[in-house]
Image (tube, rainbow, N blue to C red; front, side, top):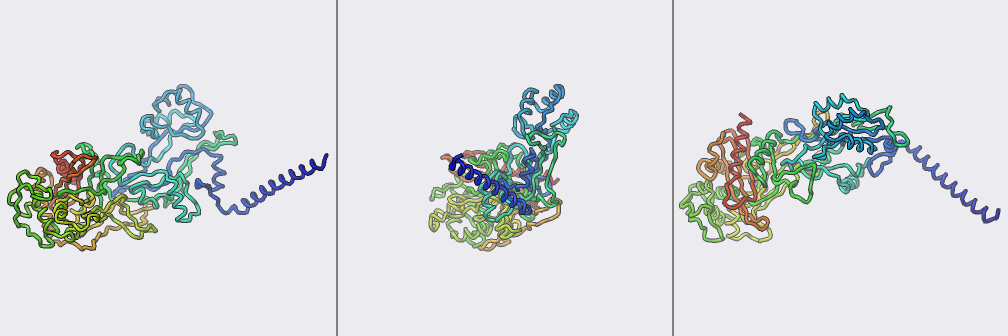
Length: 597
């Protein structure tokens, strides 16, 4: 053997010794630090992963907290019983296989192929919806009677009901790795969350996300051997969270019965675009909130607009804004209720005219409101100052976000449960000081004025509370899994720096709203079960290069002992079309009256 060969052997021995030494150091490190956890990018410890290598499982419940309505009825977390196929070698006899295939709406050959290729438990999905098959009670009984090894009916938590709805305020969840990484960096978490964990993408799912993602998942699994074959003697097992406190439940102010009825009503009346908001008159709580078109939280298209909540988006209000102008005029004593104006139809300037051909003739301020006379309010707009109009709007909760919020709440900084809420606007800051034309056009709810349906409904509640602006709540409390209370989100006011309007002005405007129904533009509501009060509006908008109308109606009922305030927005109607918002408001109040009868 040459010297060169001896050196090569020596070098190889040294290299192998180094490798063995590194392995020994690594093993010693793991042994002596076994009391400390080491985490993978997926959010699992090394010890957990060692066990998982011997398991093949299916997630039954991700462990995320749920939402309920005001009565405690679940809004998320519907439990469905689904057939789950486990990877086993023993196959059923042809007769049982045929019965099972019929139950699963497939054929034996397709079922056999599916079963033969799975390597972990798989839920059987409906061929039409693509969702896990929801077994009826009769189906469950039939499945149990088949007694097929490797097949079990398991309870899977489906977060949302199948199909579209108008509950954009609820939002959706999605995988957002960048959001998860941001949570790591902000909180310095010792136990990182899995990067594929679904977190809130919009709505309450987003704003309340930090309270929802705290519990362990519930999983059904089978144990496999070294060759990843199921150990059939052990069978399937289920593991889940051990804590009695998590996941949390968040109680909303929504009445799910009313929400469902309003959604059905908008469908029945053919409403394509718009929003409906119903508030509890006592405290301003959001009882129902519907946005059209509907969205499907199970199938979100981020490029579409369906998931956006139009109930908190700002739009041109039209004549419902005359309520603000009336308040400004009464508060500043710029006009008395019985002051007379002359409406000839054409205002004569600023491209303004009254909706009534030929005009209303001589008409008082009070009757001008009931009949929505543009001439009366354009004249008042020229008479008022921009600061007077803006002050009245802010005092009534217009031009600013009014949804419930808390600066510090259980560690959350500036908690605002209402996602996507816009402030709206009175005047555009880009145009400089408003001139007389701007004031006149703004006074009839056009130009740069923008109002959300939530603000519009809350305006009515404000008048019913003698000018005090309340902050509409969407969430009332947070509870532990065992039902005990963690925290309340108490009702509170939403004061403006401009102060409040007087109780006298508020009561005057409520009286005028009643006159809208009895002798003004809302007379079609006379045959309602309740005595109603409100204000209609039609806004001229340019959408998609086409001149269209957005129809509004705001109001409350019953007039004596009011229960609910509402705002209805029906969008993108052709000019001259029937005022569907007024009719929808009437049907809405009919529905509520019948429910409380």
